[in-house]
Amino acid sequence: MERIEEDEKIKKDERVEEKETEVLEGISPEAKIPGDMSKLYDQTFQHIAEGEIIKGRVVGISGTEALVDVGFKSEGCIPLREFQGPVEVGDEVNVLLDKVEDKEGRIVLSKWKADRLKNWQKISTAFQEERMVEGTINKQIRGGFEVDIGVDAFLPASQVFTRNLSRLLGQKLPFKVIKLNKRSRNVVVSHRIIKEEEGKKNREKILSELEKGQLRKGRVKNITDFGAFIDLGGIDGLLHITDMSWGRVSHPSEALAMGDEIEVVILGFDKEKGKISLGLKQKTPNPWLMVEENYPVGSKVKGKVVNITTYGAFVQLEKGVEGLAHISEMSWTRRLNHPSDIVAMGDIVEVVVLSIDKENQKISLGMKQVEPNPWERVKERYPVGTRLQGRIRNLTDYGAFIELEEGIDGLIHVSDMSWSGRVGHPSEIVKKGEKVEAVVLEVDPENKKISLGMKQLTTDPWLAVRERYKPGQSVKGKVTKLTNFGVFIELEKGIEGLVHISELSKEPISKPEEVISLGQDVTAKVLRASPEERRIGLSLKEV
Image (cartoon, rainbow, N blue to C red):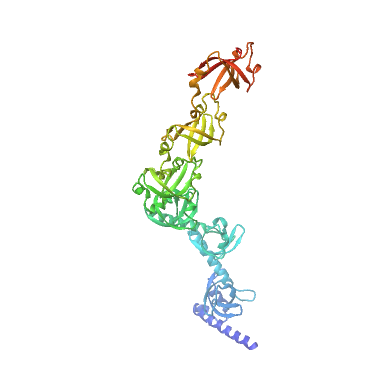
């Protein structure tokens, strides 16, 4: 062990002697004075001050240190950890002269300080010249990240270009120094500025290349209710929902998904405002250009129900071409409360083209026209005078509807229910759901009307009233109605007579209930009979 240390000392002394020889060769003859070595070293390092960077050579590696010769009387020892990467004997390195001589008389060198000083110089120059520097994001700290750009720097979260901050750790990225204070070792950098400058250059480049009608590839960046924003490689364009397809698109998400790579058409652009309008449907011909040739009026075609509203159903004849089948054009006979009573979304239906408005891109379709109009045969099936039976489907104030067959009703007007002519409401004669007999009075296919009558099933009893009810004749009947002006007495089916309040009693009365009641059987005297007016005047006080 002692022998090894002695050998190392001999080698070191030899290197010192060789270095001193090299130094002496570069010094003036006056300085080469035996015994005056202090002056020699002073002359050698008089132009180098502590804290300066000098060039040295690795002359040996011992354990965890490297011996670096900088031309001084002894080598400096630098820990291997200060070197970035492997170190070999003979490597030239830049080191910082920390001290010319420590308390033990050795020179103190630092590779780490030399690197940091050079990095500060480089970063300071980059800051002054507004050039970018590269660095690695080491760790996330409060408010941002710690970045190694040769020196420790702070990257605020606001100066990051992405929202996914965690994926930035360990990445090597370009930065721009936005704040530098060497004294306080404070360096602030930004990555967002770099990206914004790149984006600006890309946008300017793309805008300079744009032409109307040009095809460009892009990526779906964002989807809204009114369209989608497409990234064209640094600048966004708007693809409006109306320009996505010649067909129906209820929401942009039906046609596109986030991240989709698509090819679009440049519809227009504003270089000053940086706005670009895009189209997707314009890549294919407008199907409405040939709609009149492909779907002539009167032709039968098949289509798919793609939308249902309260007033009708939209039928897709081909992609981009839809027509409306109005609810009134869906059935000849069925009473539809809503189009969904007869069609459902996705149904394939047969329709007839009724009209085309090419300019406004509208087609009117009919579903009922596919089948013959049953009302055209109604006159043949129900001629005037025909006796028929049907069920009361509905009652109104003016009459009762009888269903003759599915979708075809006949109306019995309240005036055609009784010869008496005194029917206040149809419910006095018939009830809903009741099966009744009637006779056809009139048929109007154009207006889809059939008039029916019930009283016409029998002969009009008023025709013989004058012969059967003569003045002074006594008649019997039943009180059917009381009013403030008198009472009605049914003499026979369909024939009623009126007893005026003045003919009810010889004594003065204020209302009929004082002398008579509803449903009472009475005997009266005929005062007069008028078939034309369908009136018979009666008297009780004369009996």
